[in-house]
Image 1 (cartoon, helix red, strand yellow):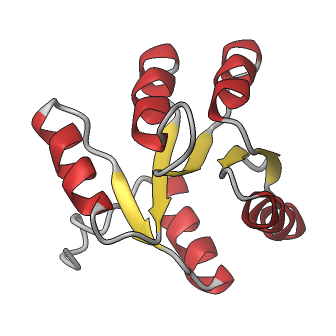
Image 2 (cartoon, rainbow, N blue to C red):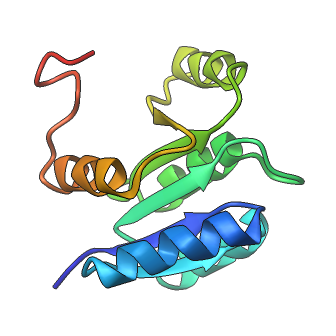
Length: 131
């Protein structure tokens, strides 16, 4: 069975498109445009992977990731952002002990799918010496 994926982005077009791409690629993807709704869904049926935008209204993607990781430590997490200043937020989270990978938007679907395969198999970019 392919992993279940929650895609969270406050831009409906991005969230729905990423979810559709993942579903067409064999994943069981569901999208959310409100981070709090995704958090409620995680508590009901935890996904194998969370892909979340960082800058969102209400609950940020980093705060969502921290709460999801606390609820289900086996859930893999990838963060997405199109803003350069997001790297500082991710670095702040790392200082607090949360090591989340950040992918830059826009990301080509083939690059995202390749990254998901690495995450699914437990291979990180650090492990293969890319970063």
